[in-house]
Image 1: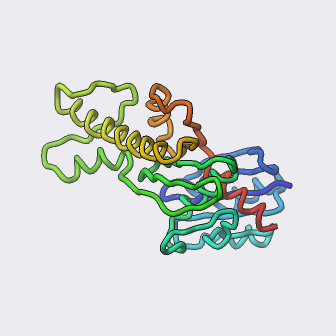
Image 2: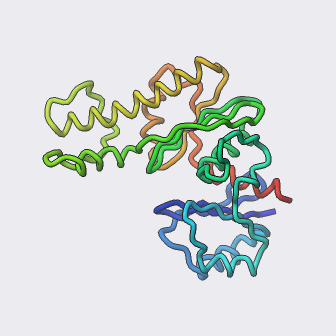
Amino acid sequence: MASLVFDIGNTFFKVAVFAEQEILWTKHYRQITENIIQKILIKFKPETAIISSVQSKIFLWEGFLQTQIKTFRFNYQMAKSITNHYQFPEKLGLDRLAAVVGAHFLYPKNSSFIIDAGTCVTYDFVDEKGNYYGGSISPGLKMRFKALKHYTKKLPLVEAETDFNKDTGSNTHEAILSGVQSGLRFEAEGFVKNRLGQQQNTNILLTGGDLNFFDTHFKSSIFAPYVKPEPYLVLKGLNAVIQQQE
């Protein structure tokens, strides 16, 4: 049975079609229209859909979708496979929650530490029994560069350079690269080291738009054996949720 999954972020609409656990198709959109929905329905014939959104508004195309197939809007109560110990579970970001569900679904016999590198970098842990207690939120790569430009009068806006590996910068441009990129790597490495120190048999799952930034670093680190890139982790988590509703 095919299912249609939507992960709506601040910038992109990520859409995927699954057949059971297999991704048949996925695409990113800036906007979604009824016409796009219609084409997807005709081509893949999904029977159910789930929508997760960080935006509070309801889109017009959702109404059309609901008239065509059984449609769920993801909320914290639907994450039945994990035990959510967050102080206010209804306030936990749905993308973080879906990633935790996806991690536990993919690796049910191991604990997982999730690094989701998007606009913000989030760090979340779920144990092998599906217990989730919370995590950490930090400024993302692009946000750090923009903050230096925005909150100072003389520092320029610098773009990330994945192959930059100097310990120190010999000019302002390199100093910003060193401070932002090395700082973020050291931050992530510290979180990982702390987590593995507490629970060694933990998978380190990388996801999000800046996944490759972290993957490149960790592949050459002592943590490489634990690292698993999962670019579709949130979508896989939402697909797992929709299967649990049936």
